Length: 251
Image 1: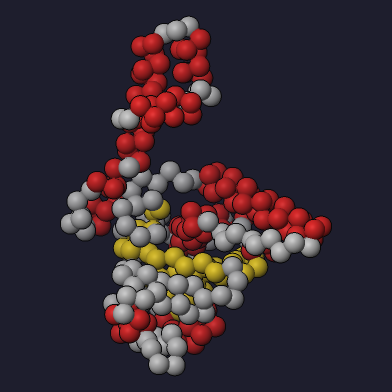
Image 2: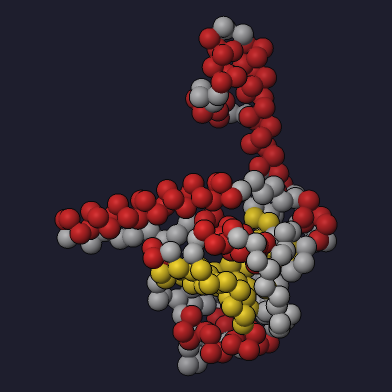
């Protein structure tokens, strides 16, 4: 490790009871042991970055997931983000300055989707922080998540791949209202590749041009309605309630 990385880790660990106690008594062996534990943790979290690209089986991909983003973590990050946005809205009202509101962080929105999949579809293998993509499930394989908090168009990378697609409608999230849709189409299905993103071009056309296709939910939904299932509609707290909703389409 570089010297600055070691210094950073020491600073970050000063709140650790183990290291603080060791430093207070100048027990360097214990300091080193405590530091090594943190180094090992950091290395484990980065393990996915060094895995071979040919890992493809469900058991192999599942084994490289290190999903520690728990319900408690999500509740903390969600509350922190919500309070921040509300404070910006207060500043906007008081000063009449057009403060731009931030998008919902992906780690929050993707884990909202994860817990809905687990608690409403019963797929407990759906996991975040995997080698590739947003979520991975032993049941559905690659699960792509798109969240929109306004009427603006979600965008797609030209090389994005998925087996099933989830859209989280969070336009009313400050009112504590969420809707999650499951689209039973992969990026390779003709029904998806032929989605019209404008009058002249399809989704596949723009990917072929290495462009990022963008399309609003209102323009997209009528084109994929027959493949689309509403999985959840409710509040943030309700995403953690286990009520299994059977899928009818199984697409």
